[in-house]
Each structure stands twice: as C-alpha cells, then as structure tokens.
Amino acid sequence: MKNPSVLLYRIGNFFYRNKLSFVATLITWLNRFLFSVYIPSSATIGANFRLGYWGLGVVIHARAVIGDNCLVGQNVTIGRNFGSRGVPRLGSDVYVGAGSAVFGDITIGDNVIIGANSVVNKDVPSNTVVAGNPFRILASGRTQKYYELDDPTA
Image 1: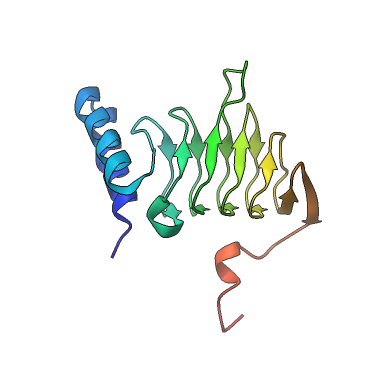
Image 2: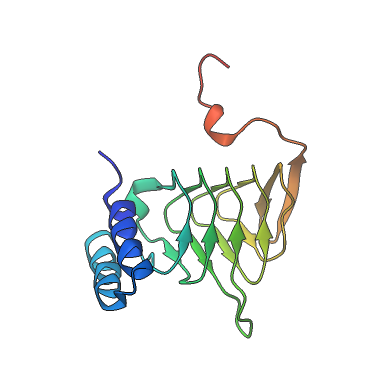
C-alpha cells in the first residue's frame, strides 16, 4: 500500500496550489492526528518521496523544499533554526536516518546519506555520507544511490 501520510500530503498540496488553503490546512491536521506526522500542505516535496513507518514523529517545516527520490526515517525534524527565517533545502536522492534533525538555512546536496540521530545545521555537499552530533563527513565521492544498496543484482 502506498504511504497514506504522503498521499494525504499530496492531496493537501493540490488544494494549497489551487488557493484552497482552508481545505489544505484541514488535510494537514488530519494527517497530524491520524499518523502523527506533520507535513504541511505548503511544503515543496518532489516525486517518489517516502517516509519510514508512515512518518511516525516526522516534522517538516511549511517552507521546506525536498527533492525527488528522498526517504525520511521516523522521528526526523526538518525545520528552521531559532532566530533564522531560512529553512532546509534537500536535493534529490537524499536519505535522512531515523531521529535526525536537519535545521537552519542550509542546503543538502544530491545523493546524500544522513546517518541516524545526526544533527545537521550546515550545508552538506552532494555525494557524501554524514553522521553524528555535530555531523561530520564520513565519505565523499559517492556514485551509488541509497536505494540501489539493497539491489541484489548490484
């Protein structure tokens, strides 16, 4: 079954883009109460977005931008930093591990893996693996996508 919390976001986003913000807000809150996930209909999220465990505990800022083919684990926060109005922009093919916090006016490049329970508050270049609190770059120059790692033919 397709992830119902992402499906509700897509429906709410449709209403938001068509200037029916009241309906979009209702759908956002329905998602919050049914699945314990806060994905505002105003967030910009690309194709093939997935949530681990239907997004349990996930909080995404209303102005966040997330690219295509991203996977966000449970209990992840993607939001702004105190005193800053900027929010994160995640590229395509990004994996955010469970329990991570990604915050501030930062850019996460394409093809990035963020390890579980990481705190990311600075830009992350494309094709890297980061983890920790504070995060550090563990590997760079990656060419394989995170979703290709489970491919038994690779």
